[in-house]
Each structure stands twice: as structure tokens, then as C-alpha cells.
Image 1 (cartoon, rainbow, N blue to C red):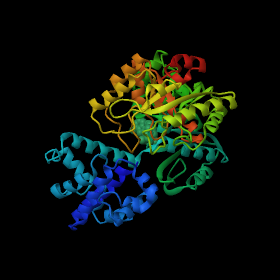
Image 2 (image 1 turned 120 degrees about the vertical axis):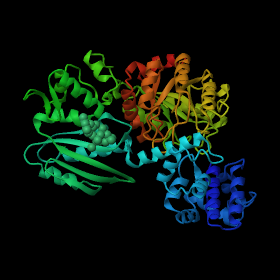
Image 3 (image 1 turned 135 degrees about the horizontal axis):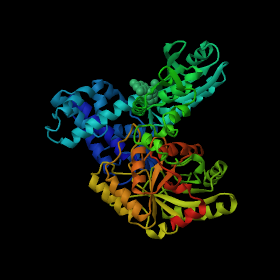
Image 4 (image 1 turned 90 degrees about the vertical axis):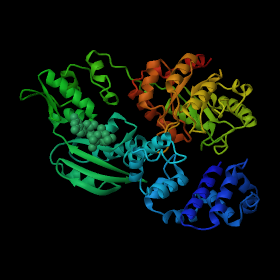
Length: 574
Ligand code: DGT
Ligand code: CA
Ligand code: CA
């Protein structure tokens, strides 16, 4: 429902107009905004029912505002608002759009503290000036700093789900250039970090590097050549709205393994290895492992680790978080692998907001080689997502029974992504829940609740015996929305004790739980479940990103619910 979005725009327009000392209009916009935000039905429904005339029946909405509302519903923006935004300082506009602050407070900061840029805002927040204003608290100061940090990061770091395909495409393209013997992705992409600063690629060339460098700087999407040399070139590549830097280094055959190790990082891991080498009377750098002047390893990465006296360490673990110590005593975990996944339990279809039918999804999962797929559309309060009310989910039960008869070779489970309502109750009664194979509980609203409230809310939902999975447990969207506050340690314990799996949501924008929390959950002995949250057939392939998170969280097969075969899974669900 778009009520709050539209109200926010009218509030913002009122604020800007007020800032420009325009009379009356601000009052009218505020009145409309208040009226829209307290409307009991989605404004898009009102519009569908009777167009502009129906909108004008809403108290406080005249023709002009009704037209702007229509414009927003049809195009997702209000031109007048965009125009107004241009009239105020750019910095102030950025501040107005800052998450958790909003236009009203931004304008007060501008008027009362002359804050007209993100930098000025950051400074004021750090100096504690904001908390002193009426209506602002220390907590708002902290939130402001968090949001600033996030947009600063967001401007430079790109989701793994965007960077990895770009990196692979480049490698694929350059692989075929004459003379290329080895070519590998290094850096954070190889470690499968959730966001990427730049892409690092290493290549070994027979003969001269000119041809590969020429091809590299002429790749599709290159907008800027930052450097072009025999040994190293750097370019900026644009894909859609993303700009990312790519570095290509040419490495000698004898050093390729050492360079791959060095440029995979991370830095802390490298520093620790180098210290270890020194302690053993050796020297480690990007050219090799040396004893005196003699190179004792360097051609292959595995040699570097083995000559240092340890197992080869999977790139996902290379963060200096205990992996070196574990590798030295042969105690690295046997990390879970994509091929061990037996099914996907969080999948949407065209019954709610997905684009494919149940049958199409099931067939696609079968093609991947899964034993089972769990259909889990939205519950009734997710109205924008076309969530299923009781009647429709009853119909879906029938439909799935039908499809089970038709589609052989894969088990179709019937689940539901049931919203956890603000009071912690679930969006369906037990009479519906008990008829499903499993229930995924999920928070989709009121993200700004206090930690206590949110913990209480989720805890209550987890008391329902039909809940088997807690979806995207922190609600964060990478570079877009902060995680909500919740006592995760408490939730890890409850889920462990009640045998509820916590989701590793593989959707690239989510990756929720993240690697750090996954490792914690694993240490608690809490079961995890890697799901894609697919809204289309293509999305089933996101499983790879969830696997990366699980691996970075030190998970083995036994920690992951959907590594179970169908029979074991059904027992577990009981
Ligand atoms: P990113 O690009 O921010 O996502 O992260 P990385 O890890 O790809 O970092 P990047 O591109 O700056 O450097 C690639 C790798 O090169 C890094 O993971 C470790 C290595 N490296 C870079 N600078 C240093 C350094 O000063 N010391 C050591 N030991 N290694 C370094
Ligand atoms: Ca990098
Ligand atoms: Ca780099």
C-alpha cells in the first residue's frame, strides 16, 4: 500500500514550500498527507475504484492533489516534488532523503543549525549538537551517523550479486584471447564478500600482454581507462546504474600461486601469514615463499599454504578469524557446498508477487536437480504483494495437490511466508497453518520498533508450533535499509531450543542472516536454512550467494536444513 509513501511526499512538499515562505499551500499539503496516511484502505484501491473523482472524496484532497496522487500511482514520482527538490541546496536534499531522518527534521536542522550538507550533518552529530535540539534524542544522533555511514559505503561498494557476474563475464571474455594461460578472479570477489569495492583479476600470459590489455580496456561498458600498462591496467566499467573498477594484473608463471594468494587477501589474513613465515625463518610476498634467496613455493597457491605448514584455506574463510590456527591443526570445517543443497524452501509464485506459476517453479527446481521445492507465497496482510487470504490459500492447497499429480520427479511442499503482525501474532490462524507442510515467519512492517519490542514480537511468533523457519531475520537490505534492532542472541537460543531454522536469505539485496551472524548461529547450534526467496525462475540460481554466506560463516552440511534429503526433512518438520 502506497499511502505512507504518498503522504511522505506531500509532507516533504509542504516543508519545502514552507522553507520558501509560500503561504497556505503547505497547510493544504499537510492536511492531505495526514488524511492519506490515516486512510483505512490502500490508496491504490481507491484510485482503481473511481479514479480522480474517488480520490477527491478523501477529506482534504482537492483536484490538484488528487492529480499528483494519480501521477505517483501511475509513474512512481511526482514531477512537482522533483522540481521543488531542485530548488533547495543539494546537500539539504540529500539530508532530507537520509534514512531515519526525513524532510521535516532535515529542514529544522537547516534552519536551526545551518546544516546544509551531509558532512556538516556528520560533524554536528559527532559533536552532540543534534541531541540538544527539541525532539531529537541521542538515539536519533546515532541513527543519523549510521545512515551516513551506510550511504558513504553504498556509494562505493557494490553487491556481490552484481559484481560476481561482471567479473565472470570479463574472465570468460579474456580467457579466449591468444596467449592467456591462466586467468583467475582474486580479491573480495573470490572471498565472496557481500559487497565489493573493486574487482581484481590476475592473468598469466604466454608471450606479450599487449593483446589481452587491448581487449581489456575495450571491454563492453568501459567508461574510463584509469591506467594501461604491460603489467597492470585499471578500468571503470558501467553496468546499468552501477560503476565498478576492475584491475587486471599480469603475473609470471612461477609466482601465479603466490600472487593469487596475496591478491585474494584479505589484508589481515595476509599479514598473519607473513608473520608466520617470518617466525619460520621464511619470507612471503606476492612473488613467492622464500628461504633466503631460494623460492620454495609460488607457482601454485596450495604449495604456499602447505609449505607454511597448514591445509589450503578456502578463500571464503580468509579473514584472519581463526582460520589460520585451525588450518595448522587440520581442523578447518568441511564447508557446505552448492551441490549438497537438496531443495529450496522459500519460493514465490504468481499466486502472490512471483512471475512464474507453481508448475513452472517446480519444473525449474527439478531441472536444477533438487529433490524438493517449497512454495511459500505471502500471507494476507501483504496486500501490495498480493498476499493470499484464507480463501485463496485453501484454493492453493487444492492447486498444489493437482500439480503434485502432474509433475513427477520432484516433491512439492506447501508452505507460506506468514507475516508476523506487530503484536507478534501470525497472519493466519492455526486452522490454516496446520494444513501446510511448514510455515516461514517473517517481519515485513514496523522496522523501527525498539529492540525490546521487536524481540518480544518475534519471540511470540516463534512460540507458534507450526513455525519452522524464521525468514530474513534482520530485515536489512544492502545499501538500502538498516537491519532492525533485535536481540539476536536470544533468537538464536529460542530457535535452537524450539527446533526452528533461521534463514540465510540468498536474495542478493538481502543476504540475511549475514556471514557474521551465521557463524554465531552455528556456534549456538541453531539450524540454518539457505533459501532464495525467488520471485522468478532465474532467482533460483541465487542459492550460490546463500552458500557463500554459509561458507563464510563456517557452516558444514549438518548445519543446513535443506541439505537434508526429503525424507529426513519431513521428519524434521514434524
Ligand atoms: P574490496 O576491493 O574493498 O572489496 O576488497 P579486497 O579485499 O578485494 O581489497 P583490494 O582490492 O584493496 O586488494 C586486494 C587484495 O590485495 C587484498 O584482499 C589483500 C591484498 N592487499 C592489498 N593491499 C594490501 C596491503 O597493504 N597489505 C597486504 N598484506 N595485502 C594487501
Ligand atoms: Ca578488490
Ligand atoms: Ca583492487
